Each structure stands twice: as structure tokens, then as C-alpha cells.
Length: 136
Image 1 (tube, rainbow, N blue to C red):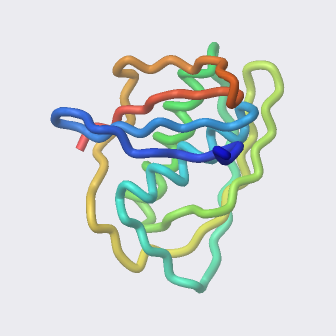
Image 2 (cartoon, helix red, strand yellow):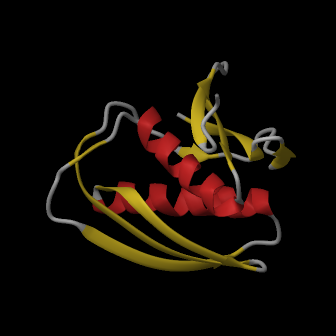
């Protein structure tokens, strides 16, 4: 039996690719974030916890996925923090994200950017699914 939400690394030539799936868009965004931090081998300190809140708008699910992950990556690079809790509200084209994490203990691999390469959010028997390619 397959889990209702998750992520799996995919072979890709020069970059990293990750297939994510979840029952709904909020779950897909969360799995994308969890998978991104797993690819980086990010280890978080246990304390102090840090909370961020941000809003964004996007014309489609693909843009929202890339924008959300790019925002997390920006905070990770700027503030040396990783995230592991996600409270997401999606209404129409707007996303409100309340995320929580902690300072990074270590990162084994760097991600430069989240790309649109072959990105499509598609409906499957598992719910929504997408393959995300990261520039390393």
C-alpha cells in the first residue's frame, strides 16, 4: 500500500529531480518542501524554534509550487534556517503560509534554485503529483 502523501528522488542528468504526491495542493507543497530538505540532507537544531509567515499569489499550481519552495530556499540561504512544520491556507490564487523550523545544524548538499523544467502538477489516482527539478 502506497502512502497518501510523500516524495521520491528521481534520477536526473545534471540536476536533482523529486516526484511528490499528496491528496491536495497543500499536501503537495508540504511534500515538496520536505523532499527539498531531504535532498539537501538538512539537519535542524532542536532549539530555538523560528516561525515565518508569508503570503503569495500565483496564476497556477506550478507557479505556486515553484514560488513556495523558492521562498523557503531563500529563507534557508539568508537566515541559515530549515523548516519542518507547515500550516498552509490556499484560497483561489492566494497562499498564506505559516512555517516553523530551526537553525540549521548542517546541510550536505546545496540547492541553487527551484526550476520550471518539465514541471506539471497533474491529477492521478494518488491525488496530485508533480516532478520538481532543482538546479544544483
